[in-house]
Image (cartoon, rainbow, N blue to C red; front, top):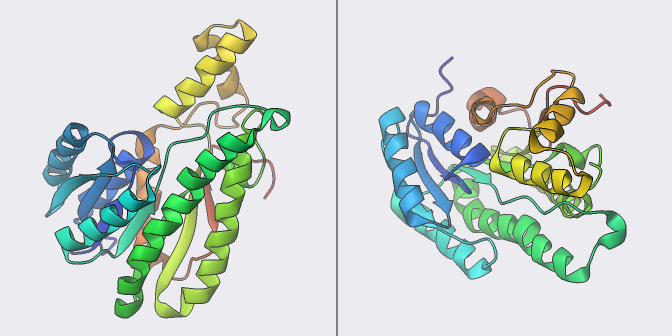
Length: 262
């Protein structure tokens, strides 16, 4: 299926590896030009070269740290300058560390609210004027199944991500008539560095081996396995296309059936 993304321009945050890289690769394969962000310029340059091989007419990396809102402004402005505008943005960040709700601290909440809520909104606000002027745009935000079914021992993630749900739905209703969609793409358990770090923490806490923790997690997934990163990006490319123009304000799950509700 041709998604009609040739000549579209995208900014993909957190694209040096994992799910963000999968999104960048899917967009590049559809012929979109891509600016990617992360913290390490060398890694970004390597990924950008690969994106050009996949079919991106133009691909480059601009470093940006979600801890610094000034850098988020610079990232958005730099992406606009590099490509002449941004039509598609994938708002992404690292995942909060595991922990129980009874152990939540104000300091951690402040840090992760900035990373997972303020930084994405800052970038979106910087890019929205151009999208509204062109009356076409796609905002896709990384999510979590914890937005719909809180995940045990990920209290910090469950809390801060809930704020993004409210923002996404509110914004979607405000600008749906302007040709701009806003959706959350929520992964379940994917085989990424983040998932393995969480599994290592569980292994250390329980005395189990890492392999056993991963195997036990897979048993809780109806699909019987974790997702692979390359299974995530294609859905983002679909959401970015005109094929999904009537889909907005939603949480789209890719979770192997983990969430029990409909």
